[in-house]
Image 1 (tube, rainbow, N blue to C red):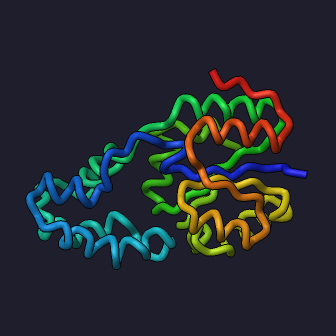
Image 2 (cartoon, one colour; image 1 turned 30 degrees about the vertical axis):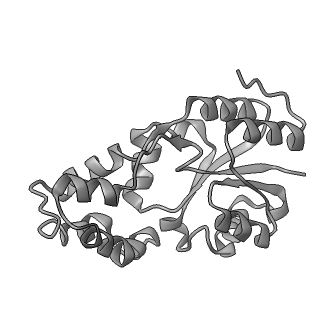
Length: 204
């Protein structure tokens, strides 16, 4: 019996991102994309795993990126470009919780972005909790992410449904024993929830 749902943040709960931030920053600052990607390929990965402080790591790149402001200002600019909560998805989450289902965010992020999502976007009130890679020390590409989340919830992985818009993460969740789905749009999402959970969900 399913007892909890884990939802990916970016691409499902949060939508509307037009470009990756690396591209946006490259264009805005007039620096080569590879100069920006150097950070994301190296130091950023440590931040996502909770092994380094994002603000401190970003500060090392400000001169290379020709950024005139502070690291805090860069992070604020960055997060402002990463989309906005989907009203449709939030409404479904509200209905699920009203019918007794526990719903959680599951996402790969640094502690700063995690705080931004939960507090500044005010998403904390829509969920029963959250699982971020920076706290678990592993990402969604690893089945250990879901096993650890299940342990913290006191559930077996087969009691958890997981949704993501990256197939690699879906496969990792399946390997852990979760019922995992690839997100292909709101209509498909709502239809599968209704079918698998046998709940009445209003989608309009």
